[in-house]
View 1: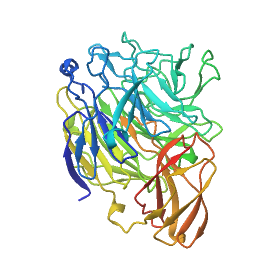
View 2: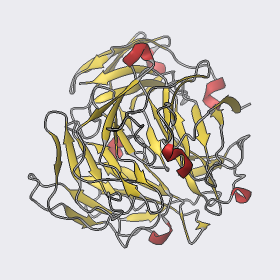
View 3: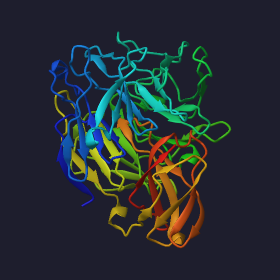
View 4: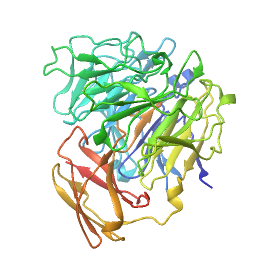
Length: 476
């Protein structure tokens, strides 16, 4: 069966990130349940999950000055170059929501692989539902979010591991909560138009960061997005390979009704403009999009009617950029994965799906795993490969198949997702320079904006588009 049930998770898994240990960090803090904000010092709201046996460990959530757990509900995150997950923001209070200034790192290898949190320098502003993105130089950029008084923040910040946070003194436009950002090959950022709750009148645009924090962030509008007011809880991805610089926005909604709209923009064009692409087979919002190692896009979860689980029995579907078509695949076993659902690619090419939180105090606890068709095929094997590589270097990969049968070599950034937002996700082509017997010499990019420093899943794909299980490699 393509879909298989796995573990029952004892927390609302609103946030999910794959570590280089192969384990997935799930966390939700108070988990959209205000009664949980007063919990005592028991380490609730976070679990580290081992897919191979379905077991959980419970890393202790960071504490505030009074010794109570800090509420990580609705933070944002991206990976550092050392493989640790950087997390910023969270919940200060409910109804109305205020954001916290705290930021943290999660080390997947700490405590004998059971993981551990460390609190780092606090931001200048509180942020609830912010966006966090790792830049090509390894610094961490954050945008938007509700501050400590519940107001929308318009002064982005950048975290440097040596100097802490620096804030831009000039305000940006009123970027929405969880605004979807993509790092482009020139080092600029692209706001896709996807977000949570409404676009605040801000259109898709390219953001050019100034050289000083006193300078203004330049916003260059990108036109053509169809139904821009229906991008609430849309998905957006940098289509594979990342070098093509094409971004797809998928579905979303407005007024409680989902759309099947799909648009693509070529950001290598002289004047980038969104254009129409084949529509989803099923309108949906609150869904998830995952880049698969065969260069296709897997979409699952969501509903035709916002958080309406009566309209959420939908087959998954896969987009193939090579044929520009969508194909319906198997319907999940579990129904009702709407708001706060997540989906994450595993190193073996399967997809872990979890969560769904249609009402406060209730959530879907069953973890489910999808196996794409290539899982049942005879797959190439990476018999040896480096564990680290420098930019611009050439590395050698040995396989169990003749090198002439290998079509592609990829670097896939591990996912760190929440609310359908993932600023990390990208598949980078690694050109094959030469082939000999069962070995390949491949070229690592020189551009840190195409592949920011950190850990990647190294995958070879054969001429039948069947991917190997990944090996981990760190770009330094």
